[in-house]
Image 1: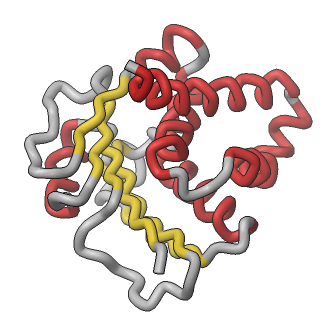
Image 2: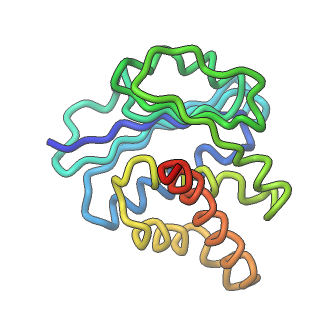
Image 3: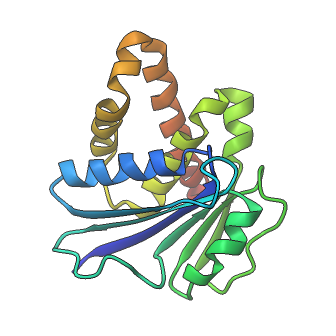
Length: 187
């Protein structure tokens, strides 16, 4: 059975839950089995927010998992909180422009991206989470780009219709996130 276990973690307000919702919606619409469990810190904004997602080709037998295939860490506190979900088969992605430390975990691979810096300097702080979604898509290849774009339309379509430039901005952010890993692989 093909099953991908994903942990997304960051500070409240970074859009972790939005990314997770788009991801599982895309998986569902693509005919996959999906599961999403949000976990918020004590404070809705300002605490660590964690999203547990699973995307599979067959029914998912267990809602919780001990170790993730890919763990996205978007703050120092997220690094601390999520180390327990990492093992030697995990891929860890962290934002070098937000985190002041590198995750110290034994895993298959640690990837540093500067998504927050790119969002702020090249696009808009509002699309930081969509850059992360692009990174996640490229890192896992669990879904197709078209599936993600369709889910983005479902989640953000009304905002896109009201301000068409937001659609372009979000799609550009998605592409930039994907290119962060494509460029890395080409090196």
